[in-house]
Image (cartoon, rainbow, N blue to C red; front, side, top):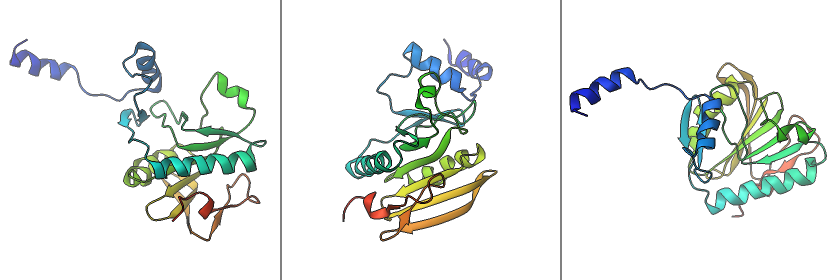
Length: 196
């Protein structure tokens, strides 16, 4: 193919967003391999950074605390997908979803199932506080926690409106946080963050 033909081909093949259905089909066909760390956000495949020890520790601590406190009242998902709309299916680090859990054998959780979405951030703070926060708010996620490992705090976002959340609370070491769905069951921030 000549350079001229290649330029003309680009005119006929414009970039366009990928749908969730196409994303799944790419997995079925092997275009996206099972060990590829990508997620779909706003129709774009986003590479996910490697999981370092601090990130892994906080995810395990969240899972342990959530299993102990909410395991009989919610379905707990670790690094599993949530279908936000036709264009976005991110994989939050931890989620609390409505029961019964059996419904997730045939379809991924959606915004309507979600009680809490949590992202743990060590190297991805700009994305987690930027495009992910906007996507979660715009699709109506009722509560989003951003575990900021670097600054040793948890940002709690509630009341989605448009591309933002109306309510934001920051909890640091010595504070506790409780999901909106289970307000009487607070978890100390120190039980989630890596030890000093």
